[in-house]
Length: 186
Image (cartoon, rainbow, N blue to C red; front, side, top):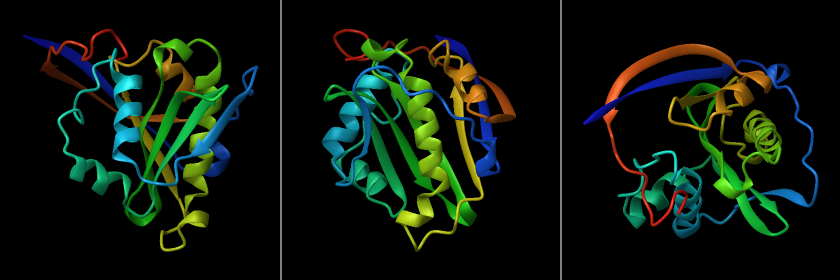
């Protein structure tokens, strides 16, 4: 059985495209996970994407995780609410000054608390200044991402409110897979 999935690709072509978001209430902090950890990265991926059908990386080996998160210019920024991981942004520096926001999202328990816009704006800022932390990388000229009809109901609106512009749309049939884990988000 298959489902129809629409995928939208969005971009910013200048740091001035980025529109800020208000900081959420409470003790929310965003910290870069500077030590590549396949265990932690897989935890974030499964926790954020478990209820929205993120499955492409679930079968990865430890070596595959290590390779992807250990590349120069790969960064993971984690939002913590009172010390608890609430969500993350994964950046990947590509060729010619392009940075992809590969993954972005919140653990289900933290959605709807105004953390998402703040985390996305913060992650996009880190994409724009990535070459300052990775001198071997070309300065960022473009930040892009994709989202799809399976993502959270507020995802597209959040990207647009942060200044991302739509540049491509694809509609495809994909296998209808169940959300992994013993409960959604696990």
